[in-house]
Amino acid sequence: MTISGAGPRRVGLVLSAAAVLGVSVLVVLLAGCSAGPAPGAAGTSCGHTRTAVNVPVVIMVARGTVDCATAMRVEAGYAAAIEAGDLQGNGGGAPVTVDGWTCESYPTQEVLRTGDASECHTASTEVVAVLSLPAVSASGSG
Image 1 (tube, rainbow, N blue to C red):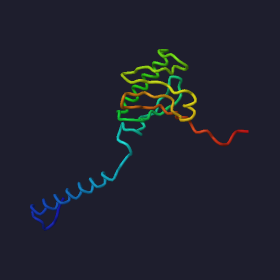
Image 2 (cartoon, helix red, strand yellow; image 1 turned 30 degrees about the horizontal axis):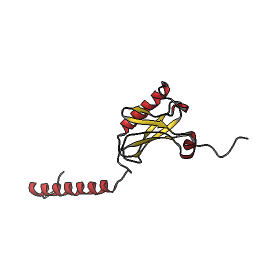
Image 3 (cartoon, one colour; image 1 turned 180 degrees about the horizontal axis):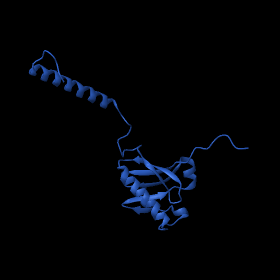
Image 4 (cartoon, rainbow, N blue to C red; image 1 turned 45 degrees about the vertical axis):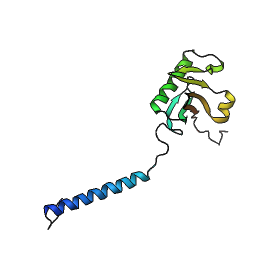
């Protein structure tokens, strides 16, 4: 940067002031930004996956805090346990432990009412697999 008619000391002061102003503006802009809950906090959507019977779901943090990689790994482990036949009960809904988490499916009536297909939880954290079905068109063919 060239500033005509200014000595080296004045150029340094101008550049320092510009840097301070730029950082201050950046801090103010970033402080005003909020992308919702902190990663892994209650309300966070961790990603899409499929249940053991290939139903699309979104994994949501319902309570507590957990990193999404852990939530997805536990849900994948739960689906694998169902696929392997490691669970008892109607549709494999009985509780099973996956990496220290207790996982179980909800009864059909609750799934239809809430959209929540299953949950995995610890004493302080809960993640829920929420149905993620494509929208149905209101217009029928006929």
